[in-house]
Image (cartoon, rainbow, N blue to C red; front, side, top):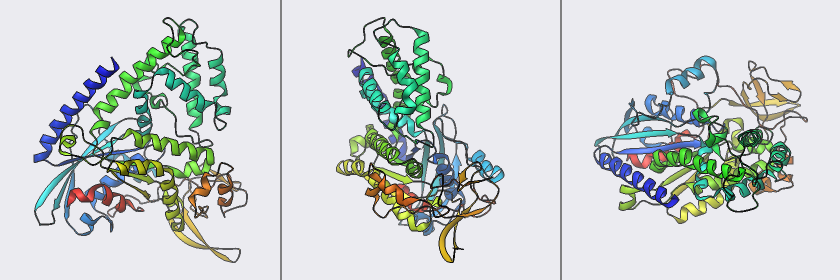
Length: 485
């Protein structure tokens, strides 16, 4: 049955892709996926990209814009009527009027741009750019398609029992111990174990732990599936590979398969399998704040994310029937939370995180790059004199409620902050002992609660001019420039 379902999915993808490609001969189209794990800045990046293309901006590295070959870009009706539109105008209003960052991505949304440009020979062409914004947590569900419930249970329980998670997993593990899979199927017991499993996943995602590898992705953003049987299951300690009919284990196995059929496969078929290029945004600083265990978990998550992509150089057949993702850009966001002297170091840390994944992608002929960026810059740099010494600082308005050096930020006062210095050797951060983290304390105070603060958008950010950014132009050059030549 699973093989038949997979074959049907492949057939649907092939037919839809063929239709897209035939239409693309007359109307060239590029589908760009924008994703990342929670709080990585997906909505901010997509908003900044649209603003830069439609209103222009200072993008010196993005050759089509810098050379003047882009004549303009206009918003168009989105191609899929059943998919929510990316709320670009609302996000701009939130930035300008409330000085708040837009809400996080919790579902798939799309927006279409028509980019008018001059080719190298002076001909006027139009590229249709379809932006597909979706939660990165959903990518981590794709490996579930190749797992049995027993595989999923073993993998999930091993993670829960790891030292970095064992404390927050204790209530869930206690529920597992009191729920023998060979016992009778009981709805109340199933709901209790599933609720504790969901609570454990949510606790893993808090700022203190900042874990990234947390499938199933919809458990933390259920939407209209909340309370459904497809989201009411959890990994149990199985004594046998296939639970017997009528048992709690069999109930969990059936619901796990329903989750794959009702949630994971439709996302793969309708959205993911049709992407041409991809940017994966990574909140590297949150993992650095949480320590070596969070960084190692992020590395595993990013490895799993790239493994989900069908990467490689396209042939004629694959272009028509089953396209490959030819380019993947991993971007370490919030570079504006560091002084520019650490931007290259942040990029090196991300490069180290995706090192294994990059090697595999290049073997398949795909292009993969890393960049440290801030799609919308919230700070500016300054030289501040302190204790007779001039120090590199960043100036901005920290978000309210944060604490550093005993000071509670109110979200109103602008402050000069001395961010921690990243090590020159990124391998030092992967030392399980945490030795590489001990040299990263902020120069702001000897007793800080975390190393990197979060900042509000600056006042007057939306005006006639371009949005301030760090290396957004480099990202656009990698992702789009060759299709605008």
